[in-house]
Image (cartoon, rainbow over all chains, first blue to last red; front, top):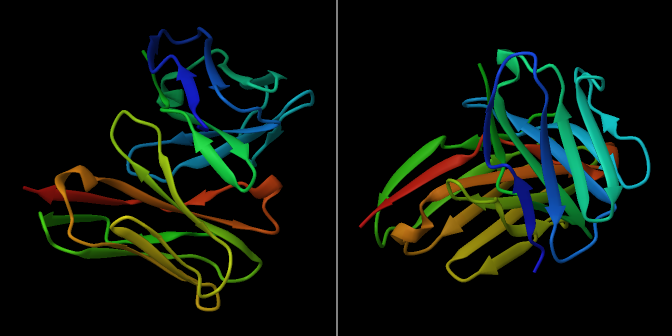
Length: 113
Length: 114
């Protein structure tokens, strides 16, 4: 149980385009999901907390207009990287909270050319 | 700034060896300490979550201890197997964190040679 899927697993896009990443909890409902980012040789860093039916909470330094988060249902949160630039190239991973635990998706490797 | 340190950064052991890693975290306002096992191209797998000082958890050959007063946790693997090869992450939450967000260390990458 407690499986989280993420799609796509990797994506290459051109600078200036937008990319949407989906995070789904497959066998449980999650009112809270989290989006993390990991740059090479760095820790997973929280970008934002996604709450079903309300606005996301962004961490300091993360632009909310650039990283749009929508949590329209109890099993789906989406992250849209708008007007992507090469510096947005990174590994993006989501998690869904169940009780005190967080269950992670497999992540999305984004490369912006 | 809350910081989680993990050591060593990487570790190479022979099959059958026992090994351990360290996670250091801020001891103030502690709420929970999580250990994850992360294989390449897969989702991080939750191993343990510990909340009480002195907690010890065990799952098969893997166990973990927690000292919240001094701010450290150890993860032990007994009789390492090649399938134990992965990156082991620890993450900490405190009462001040937004809705219990996890603050991660950089991980310890374990390679077990047959």
